[in-house]
Image (cartoon, rainbow, N blue to C red; front, side):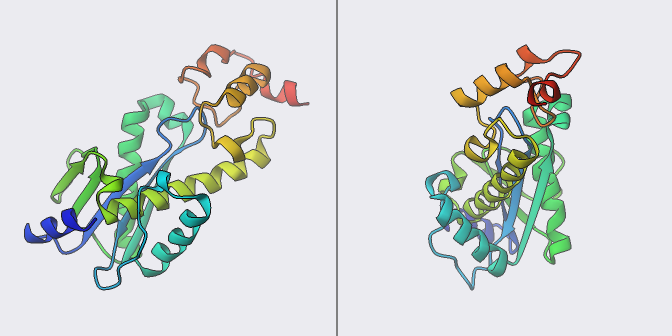
Length: 212
């Protein structure tokens, strides 16, 4: 899991950031990106693609990454922006924001490893790695930061917009979620251009009426 970082160092990188996202597929909520520069002198055991980890293990690793990484950045792009520019461009925007936050956290990246994607006009070398969250510790760490951050947001949204089950499915298109949208109509955090939501968008939102 250090192969790509080692290669980046041979190519001149010393502050290597892994970048990944969570939330491209859901019908509701933001897309969230994480950017992490790990400390090579303080390796964290057990890093992996966040989807392969239990929620409890993700939370444990999230805390370790926050405490021990050289820098952590997060980018969040909400559903309105996703509807405006499409999910791919919103994902890239979130990734860029996550990278932009690294200097605020104390370290600026000079080499970037991303899960599958590359970013336009990035001023440092970058490499998109298909399945990178399972091949690179830095990208795996970023995937954990993104996933835990987004999951926590969706739990909060479940309180704000009850009836959809956001704390369970996190906005993904489960049968129960789609049934709730059909019954209640979209709420403010739904992606109104996404299939499964767009069919139920009306000029007069139904959510407040249905839940009253």
